[in-house]
Length: 270
Image 1 (cartoon, rainbow, N blue to C red):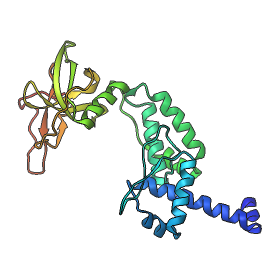
Image 2 (cartoon, helix red, strand yellow):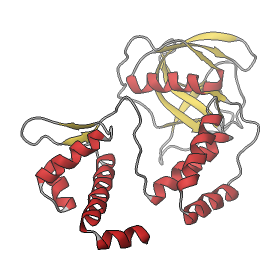
Image 3 (cartoon, rainbow, N blue to C red):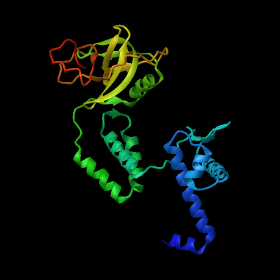
Image 4 (cartoon, helix red, strand yellow):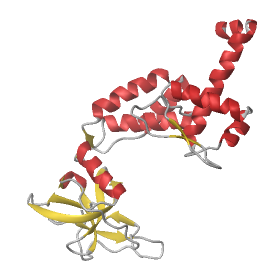
């Protein structure tokens, strides 16, 4: 209130507050969409395209990496920079991030719990009281399952990168009996299922889809580039109530028209 009162008495201060609010709105818009044209930004903010160009330059001075395209119809986009700049989150996004961080602190991915706790403390320090109450209520109402094996964060990153880049991934896989064997795969998706992480991949040696428990994978580096397969099934790993086997689990396509198989069907679950 004191700051607002001083601004009302001083037109220059009021203009500064208006520019700061506009910069925050501009930053929020750039984070919400991959690309905006200057005309779109000017129309949304009620200013000229010349003002947008000046505001973009101010964001760059604050180390936000805003890229301006060239040519007719080119726009502005917030690109990845060498350092992570501050981000603007709306209420629902802030609650979602806080819940995810709280889950990560006691979750099934090892090596990130301390970093998640530091990030959570920073976020909750600046959250509004009503948002903290929402986060607390969600945490009280959910009970994490106990006894699930943890997954190394570095392994999860390697597997996720291979999925994203469509790279073949060769790894040693530990079976139910503790023995290890080599696998050559083309990773498709990571699936979080029943407090465990699974890799859904095309198993090159068997020419078929399989699911692999990530906590049993010892990966090498992603190698040759694969091709995205057109017949990727909508798959989920089979329920943990099925018997386990020393090899990887089969992936079962599921659709509304496909009846579920019994636990005595051929194939083993992960």
